[in-house]
Length: 255
Image 1 (tube, rainbow, N blue to C red):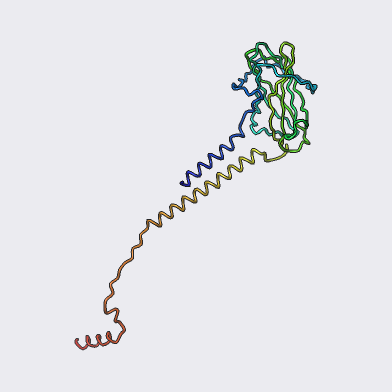
Image 2: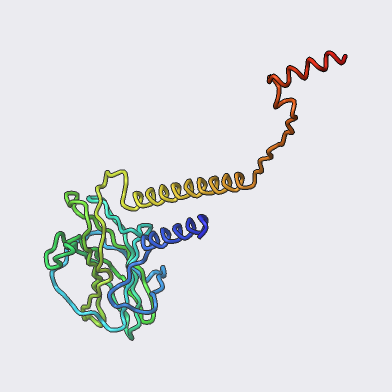
């Protein structure tokens, strides 16, 4: 295989590895059709005062699908002590309008979901509703503790709503987030991009070196060396011998 083909194949492989950094988190319902997020007056007003909801747990209503997006943060990097934004989309395929009560979330250890690392502040909504056969988007802002050690944690996000005055809840996100130091210069994503760029640069230099080597080999094979021939006379072979000296004397006498 030519060096240039190997180079582009390796670049394609690195691009495939980098592609998972850009993604949209799907909710647990695993719906085949993504909910279309729309901006409308039905979304409602975010409550000025937020508080932690109680520990009540409700079932999910049928026909309700949710979608979670981390805007401009596909790698889901969460700086400790700083606010992180996400958007929750709700699609109502039911027969009745739903009223959004709140959005809440909690942080867990990946290896032990029963242990809660931190209960995040709940976001309350006033006059927020999604009519039947409609979609709505709702912002949620949270901040993990500034004392939380950097590393991978699981975030469980839930939206609480009412339909016909009956409470329900749906989990819009249950996956991994990466907690990083707020003052850190390099993030996981930036380190990956720097590494990727360095690898591509090295491969490009090696490819150039290989092309130069191939060109020099072809030049050496194509060059022809001409070896000249020289005719040597008998006098030159005998020059300095006794025969040559006697022959010279005889030539002088003849003159």
